[in-house]
Image 1 (cartoon, one colour):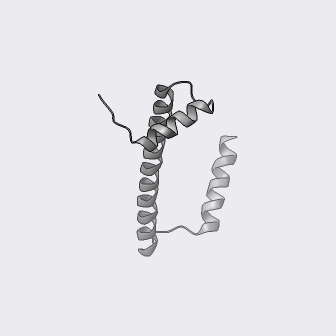
Image 2 (cartoon, one colour):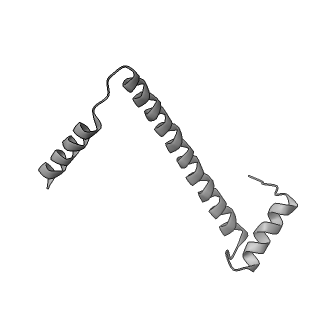
Length: 83
């Protein structure tokens, strides 16, 4: 695979190498790809969380919610049983 970088991208990588952040171009590119992967994971998490929130809001609108104090009491009871 061949990749063409813009002059600004090349300058950024060279600047980071000269600053001691990376020893090689490959290390800089690997760090960028790792950051991209983390961003993609975060974006998926945000989307999944938004879907869960939307579902919960729909359930609440249908009256399927649980009283907050009741939910906390159940969680505390569950926590105490597991200790």
